[in-house]
Image (cartoon, rainbow, N blue to C red; front, side):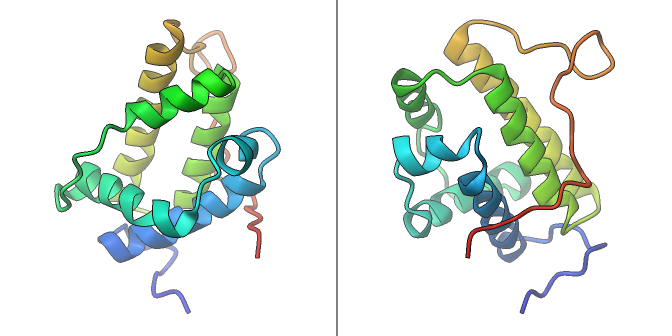
Length: 154
C-alpha cells in the first residue's frame, strides 16, 4: 500500500522511489522510449533504482551522495541508437505524468522542472542541437501530459 496522498508534496527518498517505480514502469512499456531501457541498456530496475533515487534525492534535497557520471550511460545509449528530441520529449511527458499522478507542491514542481532541464541539456550535449521550441513558442516542444493514464507492466 502506498503511503502518499495525491495532493501531498514529494517529501523524501520513499516518495521518490514510488515516483521512479511508476515512471520506469511506464517508460519500460512505452513504444518510443521503452527499447532504450529494455533492449539497448537492458536496465535492471532493482540495480538501477537505488542509483537513480540517489540522483534525484541529491537533485531535490541535497541528501544523497551521488558521484556517478550521469552523462556516460546516455552517451553509450545514443551511440547504440540515436536519441531524438521526440525521445527526450516523451521522457519528459512520462516523468511529468508520473509526478502529477502522485504529488503536488514545490518539490514536485522542482522535480518536473529539473527533469525537463536535464532532458534539454542531455539532448543538446548528445546532438549539439538545441531542442525544438517549447509548446506555444512556435513548436511542439516537450508537452506535459498530466492527464496521461500511466500503464505499468506487472
